[in-house]
Length: 108
Image 1 (cartoon, rainbow, N blue to C red):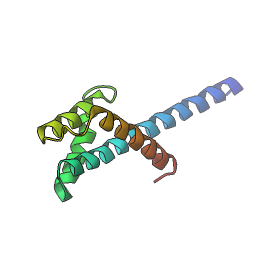
Image 2: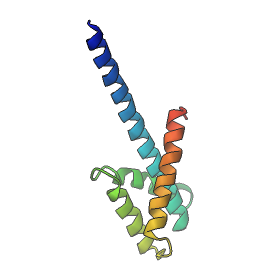
Image 3: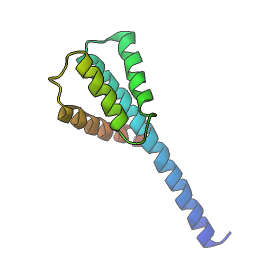
Image 4: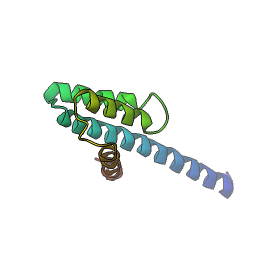
């Protein structure tokens, strides 16, 4: 194997690891977001956990974060929580992603 081949293989492994960590961090962020929204709409216990899982599942509808945002925004609106603005939700999503990335990188 040439040096170039070894370097290419190393880059491919790094890319695969980065993508795996990105996926894990996004799923973790969505679970945390689901827990936060569940609290906002008055769910607790098993209902809150089931809701958090539904938020994680919503992310598989399309690429990007818009599917998750639409789900939680719709659920907040349905439960009469219009006081939680779109900016509040987006800010929470960003903060939770930062937290989740740090946790995944730390191996938590």
